[in-house]
Amino acid sequence: MQSPDIFLDAPIPGQSLTGELGNFPWENPPQYVTLADAVGFYTDKMDNPDVILQLLDALERDIPILTIVNTFTKASLMYGYHTVDVGFLVTPILVEMIKTIAELNDVSYIVSFDDQAKTETVSPRVLKKIMDDMKADIKANPEMVVKESRKGLMSRGEE
Image (cartoon, rainbow, N blue to C red; front, side, top):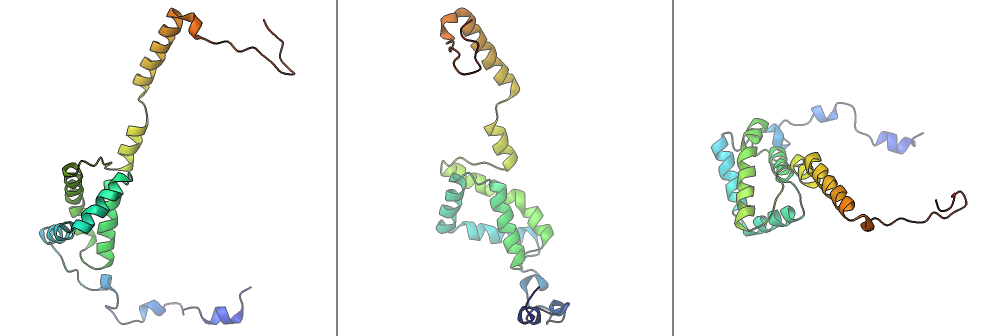
């Protein structure tokens, strides 16, 4: 059970609705209402060398571009720079901007987690070819196979 002091310090239900309208950035009209304005805003931000270095550092750590862009747009939404729909519209443009920055600086990148999963897995067709090649090598050179002798309490010994 909670102590009475903690219980009395809690906010009153509905208290957030009684505050002055416009106290938070997302309660005010956005600063950039068109796609062109939002692209200009992000272009100015990415023109900063410090931002570019941090961006390249994140890409070198295999953080997907889409994750970085979503972080940018959600933070800008929180600060009241643009609306949700402008954030969705500017996302593919930001992805292409970051891809261009990465390519100009010879930094490899991953666009999304789906792309990362595709690069880390081997396709079944390639895996089957590797297995067939290994079987052919074993048939051609049977001495390659090393047979281990069975040892242990439950082993039947050499056969």
